[in-house]
Picture (cartoon, each protein chain N blue to C red):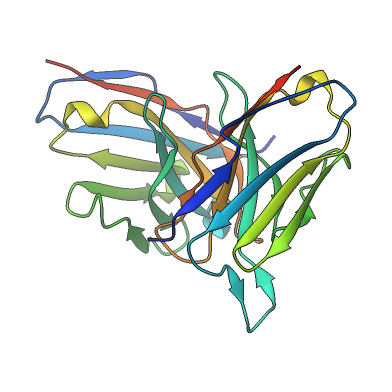
Length: 118
Length: 113
C-alpha cells in the first residue's frame, strides 16, 4: 500500500545536526512532492519545507533557511531532511507528508521524535 | 506569513450532537483564477500523524464519513461534524496552502461531553 516510513528517534546535543529519512513505497515516487512538518510538544504543526521528488526542486520556510536541507534519492525512493545547529527548541516530532494532486498532504509518515538535550 | 486562528480551543459535545469548529485566516485564501479556497482540515489522534478530512474548504477526502463537512470562503471557514461519534475524539487543525510557508491553526481539541 501507499506509505511513508520514517527513520527512528534521535537524541542530539545542542549544535549538532540530525538527518531524518522518509522512505516512500506503493506509488510512483517521482510524481509527487514531499513536505516536512514538525510538531513541538504542545505546539501547532509547523511547515518546514518541500521537495519535488521528480526534479529535486526545493522550497524552505524562511524560519529554517540556512539550517534545513531536503534532498531525495530516486533510486532508494527516499527523502532526507537534515537540520543543523540544533537547539532545545528543535525538540519535536518531525513528519514527512506527500502532497497529492489536490495540493493537500494525503499520506503522512509515522513521525520521528528528535530530542535536543545536553 | 498567513496566520490561522481557530475557535474554540476546546469543545465538548454529546454523542450524536453537532460539533462546529471555526477557522479564520489573516488573508483571503480564495484564488480568483480558479475560485478555489486553499484551505484544508485535518484531524490528529494521540500518537498518530494528522489525517486529511477536507480540502478546497469543502471537498471531502475519499473515505471520510459524510458526517464531516466543510464550508466558508475567503477568510472564514467552518468544519462541522453533524453527529458526533466516539471515534471523532481528536485534535482538529485547519491549514492554508495558498502561500508558503503553509501554516496551521493552533488546533481544537474535541471531546465527548
